[in-house]
Image (tube, rainbow, N blue to C red; front, side, top):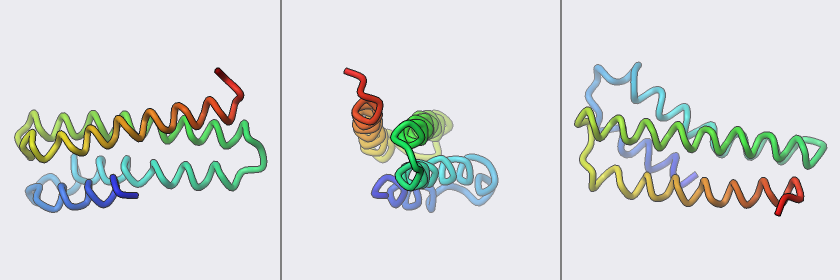
Length: 106
């Protein structure tokens, strides 16, 4: 949820012409992370939960990529992007661990 808030704060400074391009895409990807975790948690099996955690991890990768795109096309500076990328990387590691625990993988 913190990453979602940070993405909203970052994209508020993006130009209006990006509203239906990068801004929309990155916000949707960020929102899908906790949404998929929540949906998976309410599923009836650990296997289903693990599947939704995997989907959430894919959304994390999408957010990371879109943040780097935003930096490369100069919509935000490295000092604003870097903390969000670091947060996304940490979330990805946590989701990887969570999925392994749900599936019994070592």
